Image (cartoon, rainbow, N blue to C red; front, side, top):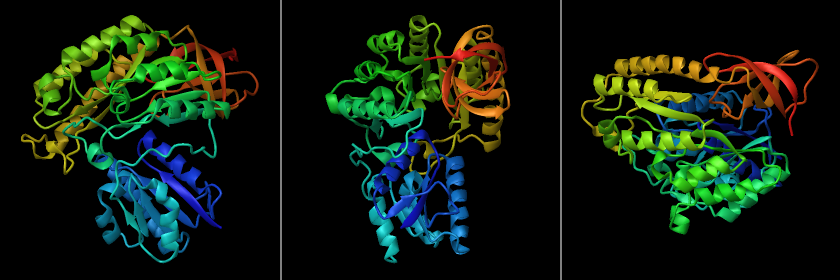
Length: 442
């Protein structure tokens, strides 16, 4: 039996794809292994969104290529966005690569591995808009699980390559999503994180109307589901019914990731974003009015072609006048095959990096002040690991895994992991909180 290791890079959507590939290997002649040193074949599930992600993927590929050259790995198969975007270049320039399956072909992982075993170099990137692989049971289930509610994207942001790699938005049926979440919860998941390229577009292609509100309502009825978290919710399709559902559904945590990218109308127009500064403020005000305890996360893109110092300063002013608790940023990456690649007035790399650093310095103070409101309060925390004896690390409902801060919890005696606990918050920093264990929560 051949042992296969899967290396996953990029966003949480790739995590779901890797879980599906693992599920497809179950009960076949290929056995999944967590250990790279035990693997006969390695699948690198790549990301190709921006330069930094591409470099990380190339580094991982070259590391495994070296392992193959030295005889420690027999086969190397590439999957994901970078493989979809540059299949010919990767096959030609890295001879250690044995095959490629693009974003529409992860269901062909076994066929690709079989082909490689026969000495062939398969390359399958012709299909992007594949049907979602339904009814696959994940081999293992964690207390936190990501669930993809759609594939592709209807937006045509001028800086983004994703629609060319993954096609248009294709929503999964509500019944299939609910069924998957029920299965995950029955097998131990307590936190479900909904993801897509744009979660607020859910349903428009399948039902002729936006149906995220209905999906959230049905998921909220699942017994033993504790936290329901919403990511990548673009601001252009928020209506009052959706906001009301988020405010009244007890399973939905008071946290939301809402990618804004920028706040200034001229930049937003050149990005082909469907919102304005005024729209953004209105949505934020409605959300905060209905959900006073809400913590927002967003991402800003700086150094977009034509961004002036005045426009950048206006973005900084917005950050201070309309504070958002969790913020990430990245410098514009000039990607070929995107409309923004040919826009005039490209910003120098040095200016982009400097602006990103300035933005995060302003945000650091905003985040620190925002967290201070939790001091002295009692919060529910998902404990995930022991740092040292008497000290544990976890996340509050206001923190998404891997991208937000942590809660460091002091306790007398050993605590169960993972588990939910009530914690008295005693202090905060720019991004993290600390507190004392009170008791386990249900």
